[in-house]
Length: 478
View (cartoon, rainbow, N blue to C red):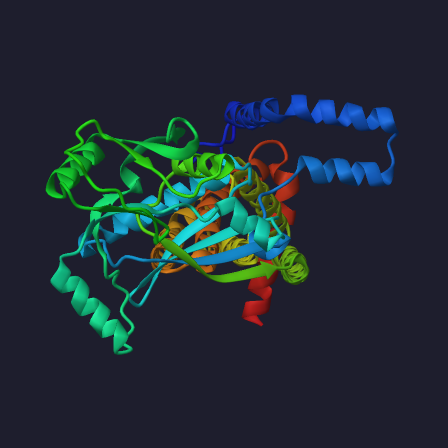
């Protein structure tokens, strides 16, 4: 009579499933490698041709595996601008400041500065723009890169009574921001479609010719119609350039800005207007040169703390759980590799706060494994065999892992939504780490555990696998 162990309550993790899993990992690795191997081989061959030396190898690795570093790590220039929203309706101010941000970012990109960070902030009643140029350590060069982006606007003449009141108040010592001679209008440089150098006075005197877009042409036509036989003030960055008398309504959507221009000055103004005219004027109120030494020291300490923490966690997990702990450490290494790959693919600007969030997420990844192993231990205590204990342990631990990580993701979302640059970097990298940690704990750890407890090696691995749990049973019962 043949002996049988009876029907299994769980379908074994068959060999063909393991082969499919293995092939899938290899295929994914090949796809990722195909994106980078040609450049890697080219760079490697160049260094091999020069001779393989320690310094060259380190330079090769440093050039190949590069990440976008933030201002606090590699240093650079930090500039703060205040936007004058006095002439913008309250409901349109958010759109206006975003328009200014886009123009400044586009202007910086034209000069080839890699990955500038331009953020908008609201402090009380003030609207501000924060510009960070990593790697640019010359403040004056940074200011020049942004340029005193021109704010050109057209103003109509004040009536005599209003002009006299303002002049009288100024004579009495009152500090008024109002121009006593001209009133601002809605027609500004944001309606300019293009600008070019022109010549007036029989082609002798340089000027700047402006072409308005459709909406600007309508505003200009209305402005010239309303101010016929009156002066029209044309201001550049708050300074009166010229105040010609309007002879007739101008409907073609064209205007000329004259002044004491040289050819070079007229060309520069036209180029700056074409690069993007600001919807609101901005004023530089703060500048700071951020050195890389402090950031590098903070980064070094953060990475050292992360490495030490990883080693301590690895020692604890392997010493406490034995083979399951070793699997958890291997899954954690896989998790770190996925995170670093994501940082390169997106790519993410790495700051000290962001790296801190990444290191914190490593601890959360290990915490998920601890929950799973403790659930598995409870199932073994109830008399289940190892295979069923693994599956049941994952099933019962999943709800705790899911709820805790969703709570953490909600917190990171609030931090990102309400925080500024540093807090947002921390929250973003932490959120990525949490998402990958769920995948690492549920998919990678479970797959590795199944591979060890099924198949021909199951008997040999079972004792090593159970040693951590059985030792815990002995410790707890004593």
